[in-house]
Length: 339
Image (cartoon, one colour):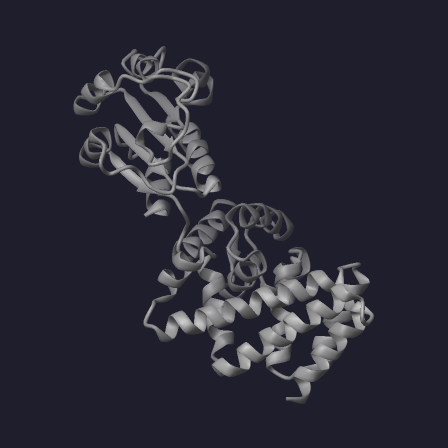
């Protein structure tokens, strides 16, 4: 849905009123950027592109601007930020908004204006009259996150815009290395497109060469090696992390966090929850759940609880100073290879 809206904006298929809501700040800021870039010619933006913050300015001021004819142009764009009167969130109101004029505008929007409300809230208050009216008359788009398929489509579109192709294996690798973080993906795609140049193809090797791994990604791979009993690779990665001055206790905590996720995903999956539902319940990115689901299949419930207990004991030993922290982790890893 989000990628579809973006493509509509790029092809100048505009609606008179939009409401973009959600907690994914990158999606909201990217939407504002596309609105600015594809609706108003650059030389007209100073006159015909306006932004109003509802925590500082009355809604009537924004609506008056929306009703004003464009100056030396065909379109006017009015962006309304932080329309907290649509939210379920409770906060001390700095500005008192009288919504009657806004309600009349929604019923009869200006034909020459694109009005976009940018609402950084997880959900809208469906009980309010103004929300019901907008859902009936405006184009309301949720922007809490992209699905995996939408993210892949967007990555292909980013490559296409730069006259570059990207292999599916490269997409998979980039998705894994960024854990689906859209802001990082956007930055890395720009770097990769510049690196390969127009008319060329981004390969998996390009991604491995240019995209830095996060500590979380390295921990995921370390656990994967342990699961697959790849002792040499696991120890090589472990010592590499130590050489990079990663603290053993931080590595241990991330391992514990990942194994807890495996256990939770396994339990919720067994209870009949789908992967998107699990992601929502645990408040983690759906891609993390997808990867955890694959890893969790390799364990019985009692194995995961045993590992979590071993990690808790190792944490106690580290904090109690009973043994060298690096040695505690080494012994823990070796114990896993003996099972």
